[in-house]
Length: 358
Ligand SMILES: Cc1cc2nc3c(=O)[nH]c(=O)nc-3n(C[C@H](O)[C@H](O)[C@H](O)COP(=O)(O)O)c2cc1C
Ligand SMILES: CCCCC(=O)C(=O)O
Image (cartoon, rainbow, N blue to C red; front, side, top):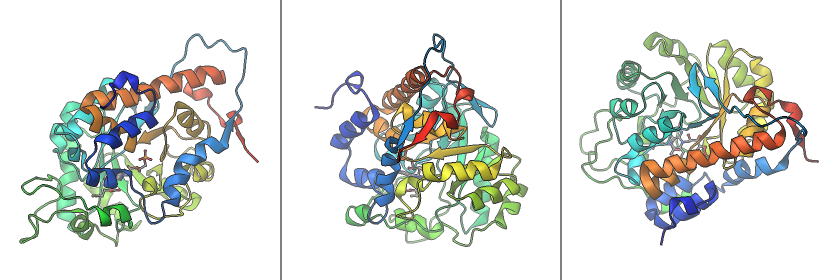
């Protein structure tokens, strides 16, 4: 029997409980990483290798975990990363996730590959949504999505740049995701005749534009006035280029689902922050499961972090309430972790808080 939410004391326990209830194909799709999953594992393991240097005898009777991301106020520095196909595990899909995020003062990043429409999701979390864009070969479909996201109140556009093709996730080759015939995926544009009932990840891959390059950012700028964030950068070189192009930076290896043995975002963060040199905001995702993970990323210069799988697991367990439980656990852990580090505001989290283990 699935334990009640209050009995699940941390994100790992939420994951374990969700794994018991997830349909096998959804589990394979959500959990999996590329190839040998070295990067997937490294994402998690990296946090434990960084040791904290807490300060004592600081008055921590008042802790303020709040911050802002591109002007959006966050009650704590954690947002929801874009994830495709929330509807595989819950009928309310992305609407439930958006509601939960808004209810705790977090932020929802809606994936292009969603079950629910941009308008439905953004309506559930006004002023607290970003739109993640996969740029299609068919620019007209992408242009229309950008316009709709902006009209519906998106506060930023997150262009995913690490997926010219989807990585090789062997778990879903073995256990493929089959989207129920008749399911409408509202953002994938007109279907190829004859493929209407075969929509799957391989089909989505054929829509992506592998020619996407820095030159396309000028086109993107012409489509929108929204701030643009490039998601999936992992080097100082690309972070500097992003800042030169007027974009913000989202350090990520896509949850180990793209290039296996790529560096972790946590490893790359210091060089990226240095390269950006304050010209842009820098965010990070990958493997976050504890408040101390969040604190370490902020100490190394991230403005905020994002979580993907833990949110999907919460959704699978209990819809909106499950996502809320996931985010509340992180929020409370960030607050306690800051107090035990002797820090009262996120602005006090700096590199002196971290000691690299030898
Ligand atoms: C099931 C699943 C679907 C995802 N879909 C998207 C997507 O549509 N767009 C995107 O940019 N990233 C997508 N990602 C990557 C996440 O945004 C994030 O970068 C990654 O999962 C790392 O976070 P995590 O370790 O907290 O899962 C997806 C990840 C998962 C697990
Ligand atoms: C199905 C669209 C791709 C979603 C994605 O980015 C992922 O599965 O990692």
